[in-house]
Image (cartoon, rainbow, N blue to C red; front, top):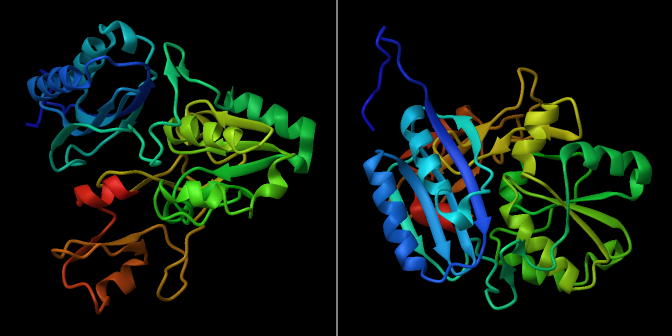
Length: 313
């Protein structure tokens, strides 16, 4: 993406959009070719996954170009109601463009269990707006359980207060977690699932319902929409992990630091993200310890490069 400026010389702020849509797609490869052409035309980079269940993407570029992309994507009837979540980028947030067809647009490893119709995932949790989440908590008090639908690493730097954080390194680990019996005591409680933008909870809440959890909810729009509504003055605490070079975003100027360095225990929201070939080291680590990390010769704080790593998270 080349730098764009207004007529008076001001740099146009780059933007990132995060989105998904569960809807039946008859020809995923045709959608892949169309989306790839759109992104290339408007010089966008990022990652888009397409399957027979729908589309899941995060792309970035100059604001005017991202707006054109959003408008053209919504011209496709099944995608007209997509909720695009906007955030400010740096212009260097994604190393490349990747548009692929997969069995699942979020990889839980159970493509045959998920059913999708024109209204989205069939049989999932009840959608709650951020305001409705607060109303549920006010009405049901401590009975309400927040259930993190992300991997445990993401939750280290930010989560809902008192949330249950499953021992999951990837989304595929959730099946084993749910079937382990360790959460069976929650099956009679109101469980609010949450994730970054809402997509993982569309599937996770369905898997929970299918496994006997009787009262399952999901936050409409995920942590992103909740943070836009309440910032750091609600039930969320800490930073939000994101899958691009920013690594994390904050919702206010008084975001709490809840993460701790894996090496020295100091409060931090920074990460060691090793760039060495074949190394997948990614952990919460303060800048001082990153600089002294003995097992990674090439690294940086606050960035993410590996396509494989993004896929696995």
